[in-house]
Length: 68
Image (cartoon, rainbow, N blue to C red):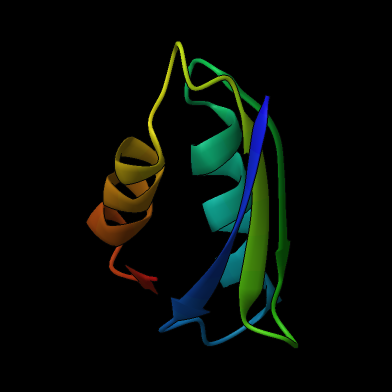
């Protein structure tokens, strides 16, 4: 398992954070997604054999947020 922390830009409220958590958690290979609206950061645990960091970032950016 790998763990990454991403800086997230574009969130306006707690619901934004929940939406990011839901979309990331739905990806095959992501075992944990925790997004904190107050710190504008997300921590994602994933199986790199099933999903890449780039795919997680792309899914977040497709929702209209910026992840770095």
